[in-house]
Image 1 (cartoon, rainbow, N blue to C red):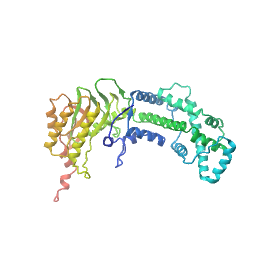
Image 2: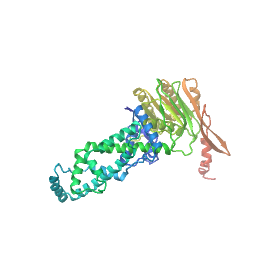
Image 3: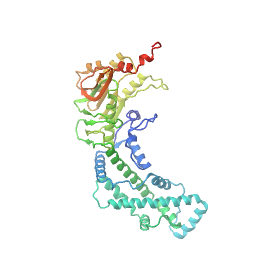
Image 4: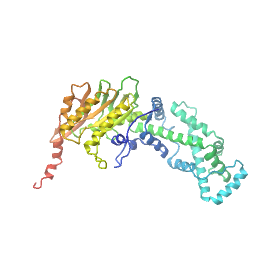
Length: 446
């Protein structure tokens, strides 16, 4: 397993998980799990994305299979039942320890007298276990003997072996019993929470893993995703055709083409033209690909990356005495340190050094970009309004220039959100201000 390094700031800026202001997140969009355990598994992947190319391929095969046979792969359990079983599994009262029924009988009476509330909890817990084992067994029987992709076969085979345990088979053979008898409560409780505790933990985890992979298939179909293809190459590459962002309805699609000879993309264009959304969409697609998800695009090929790093929403830090500009400087410093730690990185910068004057922003950006151009093993996406900066960088190798354009009709800007080759010199900030009548609102004598 390899770890895709991504810090909390990048997770926040790419809106991968919910932020403090409760804005929507990628996690919210792709979480179609039925259980809290499946959701927790997905969240752990988002916070610590580990990946293995063979495992990703197996996930893709599993999702394809589930999509081909959706009725057979309806998740057989629900969150309420799983939460009750898990609560019961972690009870902090010891089970009856004897293997002899007569001893269990008298121990059971003692528990019933001394721990009546626990006895009721035992009874309800075992009743829910009966339901879990039976629902799960019906699901296994339904797909038993069918040819399955490796990822699903591993889950189903392991579940099947655990369901062959004697105490589970005795439950499954008595299909008419809806609730356990007095002695059965303590016998099954001991088997579940002591004798086979480790296997039961594995079974619960397999259920959550099944929930998650079925959820991934639902997401793939719901958002019409494509399977990304990881390729073997000595040099890094990203080729995305028809990229879009999940948050944007009827999103215009654009391409991303990065390889060793063009590893730095300089994006220009007026405000509101789509630059930031495009940069975020690229980061999200690379992230989702490494988790084994489909991606919102027509097609995607890429090499594995060691890290994703962004600087999109810089902020001052009053508690540390940092200005907005100094916070930007520290973020660039972190990026430089990241370059030396990892071999293959994706860097996303939306406007370098907005927190200072134009001259310092120009000189500082030029210094940093020329430094980044020394690292062709990583990719850089950068947007900027500094047109003069783009013109200064034209002679440099490894850099490509893309722009989003617009047109003004009846005094209002219109955007097509289509990425084009070249540099944009459009400036619409003043027009947008006037369209919102800011000048009139600030006039005390209209």
